[in-house]
Length: 138
Image 1 (tube, rainbow, N blue to C red):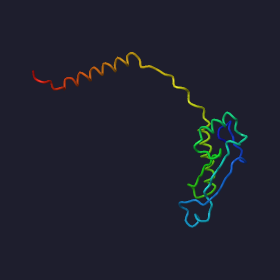
Image 2 (tube, rainbow, N blue to C red):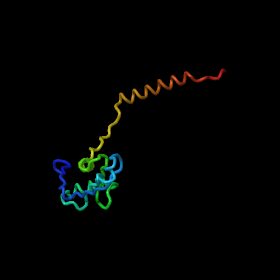
Image 3 (cartoon, helix red, strand yellow):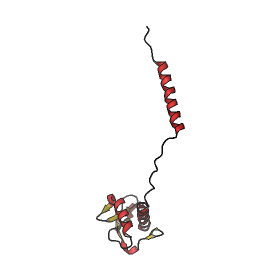
């Protein structure tokens, strides 16, 4: 299974489990094992470099059970379609988790003109509100 052009998971490392799916399907829904659970052990996989394994384990920590990532698919009526969907979901999850972190934000300051415009607007607004105030008669 190709996650990225440089990150490929051999099919032998993936485990599939099939079970009965809920939802539409008529009489066949009670007999066909169309739901697919696709599991992949990130911690024990030899096809993942160590630096990438650390990133995947950190970013997918909430989805892992003992270092194993599991994706379920049961939206389709056919088992083959659910198998393809589970593989696509797993690849999308891993692609997002393996992406490099975004570049650091470079701190910037507002320009002098922007500061002056903001202060001028504050003065204008203050003046407007002052004219609305009721002054006690002397």
